[in-house]
Length: 297
Ligand code: AMP
Ligand code: MG
Image 1 (cartoon, rainbow, N blue to C red):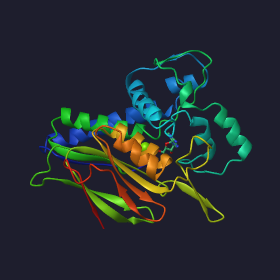
Image 2: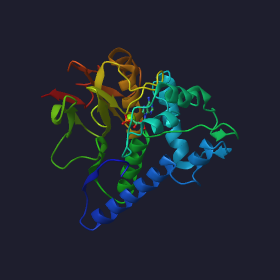
Image 3: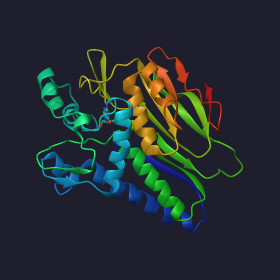
């Protein structure tokens, strides 16, 4: 689902577990369909075509988080990059490196400052939203809510590394979350220990294509339309909800080590582990306090 493997581990009664996980996956499918605008009748699709659209429900909530992180990151996170993301084609069978003119043209229609404050987009606006940097996190949040409402006591919902833990794991104080080493993604750079939390990771090793020894990955710099080269290879953000963690991880990746750390330090309840191009690991000041630990490998 959502271009990745989604796994759930849950602690519940035998009778509760199968039905609860079924409902959680169904909920995620609904979110995926809404956020990816694959159907011509969907609001995001109609909005892209310049029809006037009122945004409500899940989409409104996803966009609220997206715009909050856009503003706080001065547009490093930009959910209006749809046309540029489409050009590159990451996540499709045939990603490719677009030419500079193509990118320039696609960039003309992007820009988070063009998104109206109210969630009602007038006719002719033609914004192409791309919510891949935040919707997975939102889907995880909704799945967790569904599990809890169905009577699950504790668990972990993991959408390809964007995940959320809830409840207390029987007999354990912490949940252990591996942080991949971007240089060697089968190995761990370290292990996070969290209580109830969301953890989301953005990295240049998740989706990319290589040409002439250069790696082109899927996290774009909204200033250029090309993959962000900010000095970071991986960012992991810990926050109370996964939609926020997801968007903040993408934003931090684009901002780079200094500005990325500053964004997280200035955000209530967010912490992060940043891995630089030369393999240094930077952590925010709240790690090691308040129930979040990080152990380097
Ligand atoms: P993530 O894996 O959460 O870091 O999100 C990356 C995905 O978000 C990409 O596959 C694109 O669909 C989209 N995206 C790429 N660059 C940006 C950006 N600067 N701001 C917001 N979304 C982006
Ligand atoms: Mg993200």
